[in-house]
Image 1 (cartoon, rainbow, N blue to C red):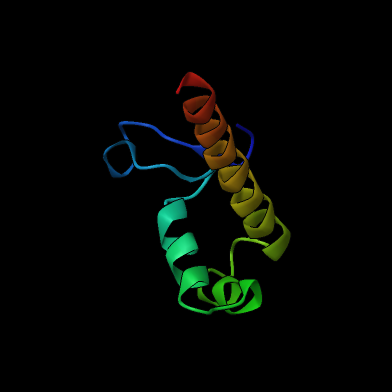
Image 2 (image 1 turned 120 degrees about the vertical axis):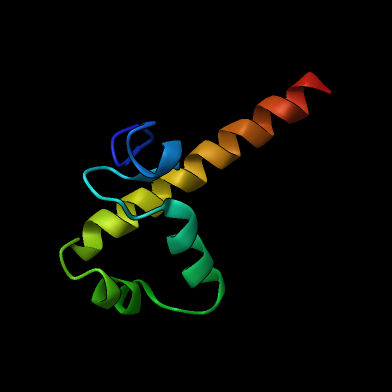
Length: 74
């Protein structure tokens, strides 16, 4: 993964946006609650909006891969 990373040294291994301590699940939760990427970017002004967008896309891709693998294993 390019935009997401997990390390036991950072938030006990929580999947975060690379180079930050921002958990991707927090970003996804904010999106689910109706916040735009621009609004989320305002909460984390040190992370460019295009990085947030890429991290969300990467998280989505990972979920789709897991779901596809689960579906094919059934």
